[in-house]
Figure 1 (cartoon, helix red, strand yellow):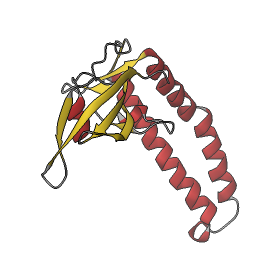
Figure 2: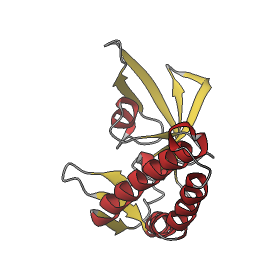
Figure 3: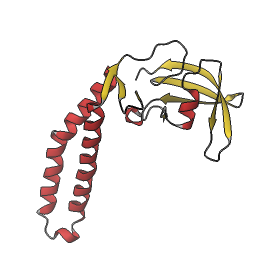
Amino acid sequence: MTQTSENVTWLTQEAYNQLKAELEYLSGPARTEIAAKIAAAREEGDLRENGGYHAAKEEQGKQELRVRQLTQLLETARVGEAPADDGVVEPGMVVTIAFDGDEDDTVTFLLASREYASSDIETYSPQSPLGTGVNGKKIGENAEYELPNGKFASVKILKAKPYSG
């Protein structure tokens, strides 16, 4: 999954279905659940000193923000194919890199939008400094990217495979 300068988010069918299911849950059953929590907390009395009520309202706000984010994302989404398994780094790939030629110091991550982030694997955005540096490189090539302090770091692409979930 990646975003282009046109503010279009490219998603695999699997990612689109996953985000759509999350939106349907949040705008249906989850809204009913949070409304019930708020109503139950409201019945406890004075709202100024009711921690349960305030926690439920905060949860509701976060949930509604997520609904708006998902709605906007899915409205601009384009569904496409998963990237080809050709060894070229692109969004939707699990990439393994080695820092400064030290092939023992490796990092493996998913190059994808944060919306596709998973607790199973670290996710880097294609717009991040590292993501920009490795995007389009082939296995065996070196990539350079700018660090926050203005210096540059070099990494070698060791592996690049399509993310399988």
